[in-house]
Image (tube, rainbow, N blue to C red):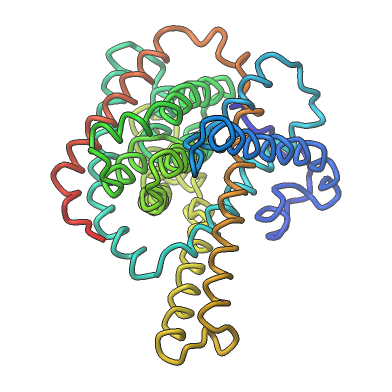
Length: 392
């Protein structure tokens, strides 16, 4: 995935501009061409999924995931076509903002009690995976004499939040743009491979156990878009929607840890290299590292919980909707969440820049491969030890 270009505007973005569009209001029209393309590709993916799975193969529900089709079609089109740069802002908007809106809407699938239950058991598993991945990745980087900053970026990208963690950590450790681009390329390669193959691997490893599969995907796949994509594929192909819920909550727990791990890594790197003092870890602004869409997800879960309680107590959700209408509203929000995720994964495929992989060299590739395998093994061990405590 290509690295987002920095905002060149001298005027800082407002709260709404930053969180709603990721661009100044004046630049919103530039998002439209790319957004139209990803919506068309998402629609085509859903149509192909239904046509191939139901019409041609005769299944009652298509076993072919529209999320997988959207990702693959986007990758293929991006590789064989020279896509005009005018579409890039819209693709980036799909990957960053539409994806997050889709994740927020996923919160309607769970009650707040489910979220806290999954989050509570997810914390020790996530911690185990983060610490193990950081230790192993930095050790391998040193053994291969990879530049410290590049090794640090790959470590945080693998262990916490993929591209977002890399982009947040880079300025905090004074990383060069080329180093950030290399780390993003490494994370993108192995994250995409995990998105495509992990849903089938985890189904075999965990014998169709949706909870353990979701925990594994939520802790071992790198980027948020890749986690949601792989979990959506698993849910679509194997009819295990619970896995998507578990993977999403687990990944959100990992995202929250950005606010702790990234400032620590910045401090550690600064002390190690003597290039900056402890005060400069303020570049990793903790408040800015707390993902706002996590709060949105939790808010939707609270909304669902209060509505369900109203139905149980007085047969009316918020005094507005009866049980049938409330159920229909929940189904509609779920459907919108699923559609937005297909749009977002189409954006991931189309915005993946294979040119950025050229000249990467073998060492970052080895570190990325080793880190991905290591975090997978660590995740499997942690889930084997603790996963049985999660029951539904």
